[in-house]
Length: 330
Length: 305
Image 1: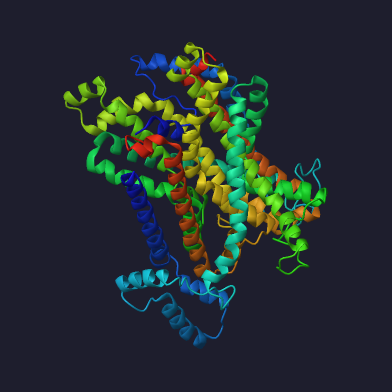
Image 2: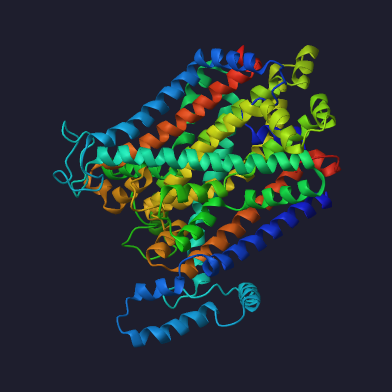
């Protein structure tokens, strides 16, 4: 088991190093001059002002020392929690800006991922044994899983938000309120949260339902299912065994889908102007705030890696084979 | 390598096609069943219809998709089938051009990701040993890296100027699951007698992979490409929607981006944002359904059901 975790952690550590290195390399070695772009953005017409600004930005980027030194410095700064200063919200540090947005993104992601996974598995398993449900749930699921996240968000915002007027369509809470612990504020939060949550939930749900349905059918054809049936075991028992076995690949699937789910949350936030990381990305792009963009990138990578590790732990808990060390998820 | 992994990587895909000697006969048989499978035919019809629309419709007009040709914010009519934007651009024209871009990005991105994934999977599975370890590590790293986040950083710094360039970037980050699945299948094919025979007869490794191993997975590889196609389309739409796609070309994602940006939702211009998303859903959905149908065609076990 320790070997299993060791391997996993090794991969995650390597991935983190790769991500940080990418984050460091891309601005430096890619065509295009980010310093110049930042300068043109400020649109200084006075040529005398450009030179000092250039040296300033270069020292901020740490471009005035040898490359290996820059790379080392980058890591040192990172471990001090210093991700630079936001250009958009100058002079707020990038880390602060991100930390303020993260709760909103998590509040969307966690419930939608967990609930869609749970509900999708349940419905998928049910669909595998009832023809009528299979014939209705399956096409719907295929349509949902093919839907771009932002489009479903737009449709819900337009249909339920603007036409029906039931839900607000922008922001994390009502613009008239200040963040505080009161019932009106919490109610407003929940109201603004619901539609983005719903659209994330629906798209993800389709994929899980299809996956579970196919896995159950596959499991019911396995030898153990036929053997149990031959022994005269009740169908419910066989179904339960099939469900438990099918849950394992679905758990692996959850780990593989994390990146897609996160990107879905990002664009959904953009549709609803929900004040999470997705909204920040949009602002960072529109304001050419590269430090902020890179900081968000690192945060997302760390979040996905942590979630992967959590799933690995859950895997050990639900799959006895990984515990005995005989075999297991790779 | 466990059984479970197999299933996850290749949902609804035949575990392993049995090597059948007469390849031509097998192909004819597959075609025979494919033409009689409602899912395959239905999916193919939808995709072909969109492809034709994207290819033909822009030819019948002499102005570009971004030109201001009509009255502003007009609802769908005989003149402007999908209405016009707040600026008087023809939505149908943008839509048809966007479908073009969607197909380009899907095919190029899918082919590129497929090629990378197959190469890495074949080499890792066939060579084994240290090469396999290293390639597997690379695969796992790219697999956990959230692709969209990397693409956003790349797009923001490099700037995307054309659709093929966008497809290149998408392809570069969407191959890992293909590599893993191909590696697993190569692994199990490698020890079969016919592969041993080919090796003993002095064939070079590349020839063994190309002539003996790959043909046995051709149906699987084709289905992989279909899934990659759909994935690339969704990814491109996401990037375009964020505003990181090529801006000189009209794409479906960009249409949704401008619709939201110019508050089409509040103005009630539903004809501006409904068609692009519906087209993406229809194309990707048709690809998925076709994939399920092909699964039934290639896998006789499912066919009987």
